[in-house]
Every structure is written in C-alpha cells, then in structure tokens.
Length: 310
Image 1: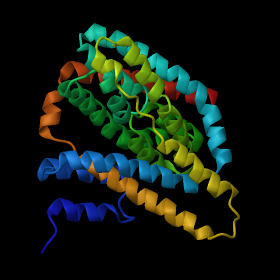
Image 2: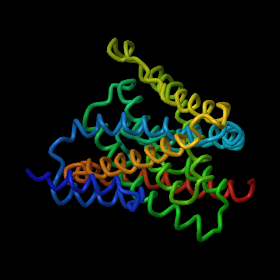
Image 3: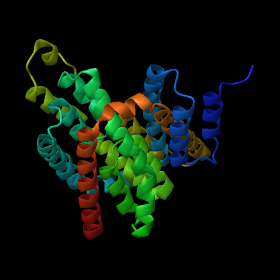
C-alpha cells in the first residue's frame, strides 16, 4: 500500500536537505495541487508541533545570549507593538475595513500572527469569516517574508544580531521568524527566537485590552485569555543547557536541536498545505492592503532602527 502523495512529500521535508523556506514552498504547491483533505486536523497538529519545536530549540541556546537578545529587543518590542496597534486602527478606518477584521490584522501584525489572532478573536467575539480573512492576510505576508527577508539581510550586510531582532519584529508568525533566521545563521536564530517569544508574552495583555474594548455581551465577558505557557518551557530548556554539567550527554542537546529543526520544517510544510483557493478568495482587497501597509511600515521602520542603533 503506497503513501498518499501529500504524505510522501511531507516525509521529504524531514530530510536535512530541505530548508524551512523550501518546506513552506513545497506545502504551498502541495495545497494548490492536491489540496488538504484534513484542514482542521492540520491546524491542530501545526499549533502543537510549533510549540514542541520551539521548546526543543531552547536546548541549543545559552541564557546569556537570551538575556542579551531580550535586553536589546525589549524597547523595540514595546514601541512596535503599541505603534502597530495604533497605526492599524488608523489604516483600518481609512480603508473602511470591517472593525473586527482590522483589529485582528493589527494584533496579528503587532505580536505573532496567527497565535495573536486566535487569542484576540474570542475576546472581540469575531465570527469565522473575520478570522479567516485576517488569518489569510497574515499567512500571505508571512510566506513572502520567509523568502524575502534573508535576501534583504544579506544584501544590506546585516549582522546576525541585527537580522535576528529585525525578523522577530517584522515577520508575523513565530514559525516564519524561526525559518527565516535559521536560514540566516545560528546566532540570528537564537536572537530571533528569544525576541519573538518575548513579544508572544504580550498576547495575554493585548487580548485583555481588546476584551475590555469590545465588552458588550456576557459571551465576551466570560472569554478566557490564552497564555503561551510553552515559552516558559523554552526558558527551562535553555536553563538546562546553560547550567547542566557539560559531561552529561553533551551530544543529546545537538540531537534535540536537530529534532526541533525537523519539526519546524514539518510545521512550515503543514502551514503551507493549509492554504486553499477559498482562503485566497476570502481575503479581499481592503484587508490585504491594510495588512501590506502595516507590514511595510513596521518592516522599514524597524530595519532603519536596527541599522542605526545596533
């Protein structure tokens, strides 16, 4: 009994010869060629596989590097999150984008893409169409960024530290941040992962902000705010790597990091495979324009700041 074509292609993505951007591209091609017969299951698997892979990446990082990266990126994080939310509100009003769709796109751009949208959506009682449009917008821009950012970084001769902070701020989803920074270099990966996860901690406060802003019904008042607990497991893994005696199975850390990279490649393949023609149709021009404007402004502004300050 032979494997279905999508399953066979997925196995190819696990090999070390397939980089994260290529895995995403293969997923996109697979979705548009064969389709995805299990979209709901794929979304659930992607969520947990991403978190699992990020935690394993912690075994390849030193707390000193994490501290330095977090220290350098904290001001950028605060400024860009609130700046993006305010800018998103203004651009959404200007383009007359649906209010809740505009809020979801702004939150996804400000923090961490689909994860932020998933957390904010119940807080504002968004319907399935509003969620689908915002996720589609962020997904399209994520796919472009994963390929484009490493090219721009090399063209501008950005250091590993500069690229790590820039990609963590300007690319939406954690998966695409990890994919782009991994393609750029190991230090960029460490910095980008740390800064991005620090941004992800803002999911709860931002979702709570929108909950207060949109509090109009009992269903919204009873909404639970999602907290990204896996980030603390990432820090725990980093502590183990930093403080555990060096003689205790040193090679196991490299194995865990390699497993994390394979998991991230599969994650990006599954994200690409989640694309559908229906999703592309549902996005619409105005939400896409809002997403592009926000993305371009935050990308250019953060790039200039990183190049001048760091």
